[in-house]
Length: 160
Image (cartoon, rainbow, N blue to C red):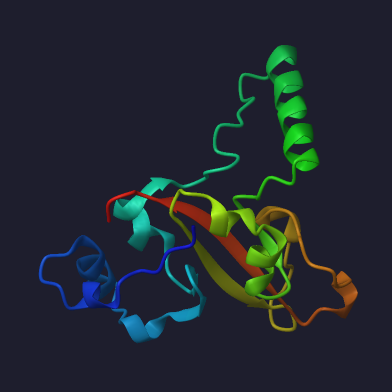
């Protein structure tokens, strides 16, 4: 399920989220909420103490040992995830709501999720390398785009 961060956390004395936000010089007004559990411009490091998993869907994928067996297992898992349309942990989209539209299972999953977004103005960003930001789930052609949104899905701890 997509969950909201309680606004009262910023006023709570000695709350880890409030302390981290204030320490970074932000206020709750620094963020933009696009829908339930969907926020723009929250630094991932501010959420560290709330996270159960940084990469809830692909975090277990690892073939760093480079053996043929681990590479085959990785390729099989990636094929399965593509077939079953498993949400991506991060990537690029045309607009924030597109992630929840693409993967409605995020709202139905019993685990608590939060999606964080950052906007890239492609008219002002030199040498933007989309391959560094994960798969593009949008529908526009790159040469027609003025902006793109980067998303990251976090799994929150059950008790916040």
